[in-house]
Image 1 (cartoon, rainbow, N blue to C red):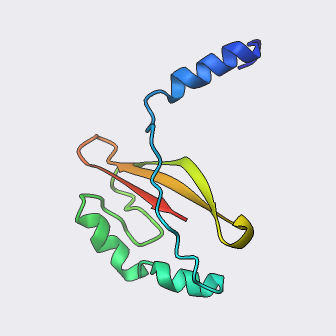
Image 2: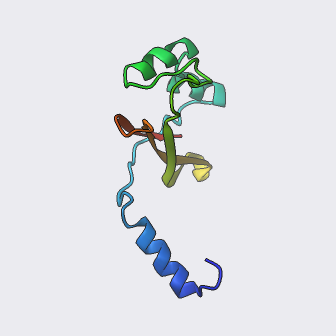
Length: 117
């Protein structure tokens, strides 16, 4: 961006983001939770023991929930922010829509998802 004026930067930003989604998922957040712990319990975390078999079902070979198998090429992971909304009394809680994509390095398998947090 160095050497470009604000009009050139704005045009470049519009052109580079054109392929991205033009809509945002809007869903009521579970704001009834009185604490972060209650909210986390409602969102239900995945158990670490379930990570490896879950990924294997999509063709990804992980050694554990924290490490990929070193004998296999690493997958490409992309996370993108797709917007945010404010909820709660006085709009104090900000929820972000995160788009995720994980793809095998050779392109043989790709999975996409979105989550609001």
